[in-house]
Length: 232
Length: 232
DNA sequence: TTATTAAATGTCATTTTGACAAATAATAAT
DNA sequence: ATTATTATTTGTCAAAATGACATTTAATAA
Image 1 (cartoon, each protein chain N blue to C red):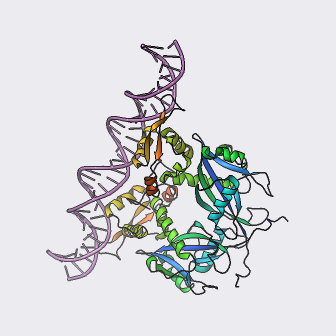
Image 2: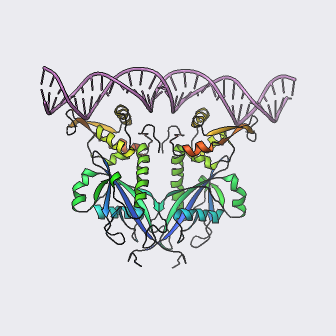
Image 3: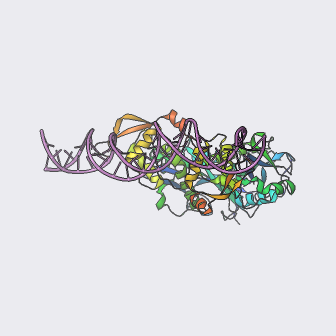
């Protein structure tokens, strides 16, 4: 068997930046690293790419193994490959970002696994270049969410307009005018208004909406321009 | 020294999808592969990531070594890591796409190096998963060019509006209304009209323009929405 | 019955868009 | 010298989208 002679070989890992929304705040999922170096330090959910899997496969496997999460929105971010990013030996890491509804997995994550949610502004110090990954992922999330309806991935089946707006405000770290936001969302035709109201947040209650799945899929790649005066 | 025991190590390569514009058509730069397997077959410009360089560094080095190109627009596309994508041994490749003005490097590329330009629709069969890379790069180029003024990277210092429009039409594979295009471009404030005309293309001649470098840098991340009715 | 509070909705001026055709400048032809 | 040719350049207008702004409504609590 031929080989590419004399070329160096490296470890290849994946690291997942998992963003979640609990109905009020945008949060980041972290775990305590299970191996040396930096054992027990806060870290993104990561692992090595196995011999018979692609990085995408690895990301899905690692995510399932460490958090039980499966079938969630997962997108490649970029590769991190500075020669000295891992002090033990050279490891390139493929960053992925994931989006989930926190409440859907709350119990599972804290009981079975030892993953914890943090406000991004209150995250602990992370190992290696993971803080940079989080920063890049936030930027990309903002970018994509401004153009495509990916934030619905972070909401439960039934959600209210105030919740949706809060999510957009959290992601973009800005305040949005309720009237204009409501108009914009309506114009996409992606939402179906339900009879039921969520009365937990106010006396009047807010109507629940659900996603029009068909239109969601059809419009996923369309440019929707959700955010006014957007500057990245 | 500690090591991550038992984990497999892989080769890591970079492959560059180099797009060029000659004033009329959008083209793709290819070279003949210099090593087995698939030696002498048409290929993207690629090479292995060295022990002391990042993938970004490697892409720049490989590009310079194989084409002499230096200091050009280069952006990470994504990683390609299917286990069997290279028949010899497992190699992950980081794709990059680059943008250049063909005429600026024409002589250099064909004489010193043996790189050739192809219309994308008339490209030869490529090795491995390079055709997929080209397809993904085109898509990403379209996406970015719709929102950010990166296409100016493919034009000479002086260019005309008809040239600029042709470039946009090539990239998006569509026809654009001249009046609306001109209005949109003007409104960005990125162009400075010159006294001189290019008379090679018509009797009347077309005025040359140049980029307002300061505004270009300032607006590079702004959302400019160049393409009407855009669907990706 | 009234007060309270968050949710839902309406207006208007301005800007942007998309669709459409006529005028212009330079050279070539007569 | 006049006219024809051809690509370049520019203009209009109705429709849609945007941004800024405040009031009404529905339900519960007082």
